Length: 478
Image (cartoon, rainbow, N blue to C red; front, side, top):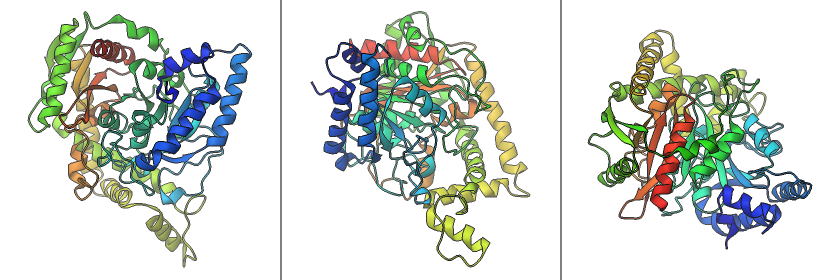
């Protein structure tokens, strides 16, 4: 048995039985990284020494009577989430050499649960991209076909999980950056509702859209990780003081009696026919398992991409202003003036896609254009949110494709940013509305590329989508 390929739940069960130790499990994962990552490029850095020390501590705690589903489990972390003592480069030259002095709240929660931090996963620079080709350091490859992208921006996390280089991983989702790479790589990716998980210590891209979430091999594993991550945080004012349900218990209800909505705007022409065939087969499976399938409408869907790329870039422009070469990060050599320091430090340290989004965001916030672009986009965002609120009056969850295509070839979309942006059409609305969503594998193309289906739920309705996703997953495996 290759223990590096186990799920969280299976590994935890074997750790309890002392079939192997956390040190042995961690070493197996490190060996898998050493063996496979030259091809996958999922990791930017690996902390082998630190991981083994954490594993030793987890074994000692278990011997002393402590238990826990995450105790001694190696997890990979996307490289914009701070973990004390580890680099946090955001896959950018701007932050080369930066080592985090503190834990993000999600890192602190996982550390408290006994997680072993295996390493830092590759991503699109500052989370801006959908293919992990925008990393300043390397291009991550899809474990199912090394000529194809893993998706993005959490492509390194998805590739590590699907490629057997991590038991589970953390990603972030601003417009689909957990769900789309999960779909492309054939793993489970959960975007929690806005505010369900703290963003403290997570490098901000777009503060009203960002969320941290789990990327795992099964739905049950996603529930276990979400349980550890969710909850109110005094460091993040956007996390409301609402109860955190037992997500693992929520899995058991089955699909019978659930109403699953199909938004008609998501089932139109333009998406790849193999992708849509897999998704429609998943709809039929849900119906066969007892779900009631109803058609709903989200009439403002056509505006979602435009709204997203105004709101997200505007917020990115404000958030990335801090990377100016003054306090930390890249500083140009021998600047001639303060303006020179700012301009050259950022020109040298930031990549093309990040610059493109900063420029666009600064433009839509500029005098004379704010109301025409940003102000209007926020009004349409409200209409999109209202569309979902109306839809959830008649159903418990929505079932849609995750992306219009399966994983495309490396380099295929690099020269056409608009084509890449349009690939987010099925994922960005959930971020604009603050909803929860999960990507679950639902088939493969003829070329063997994974396809994911997306289940969307109302804000703080993670229990419903986990229930539906688990029931579907178990039905498929049966």
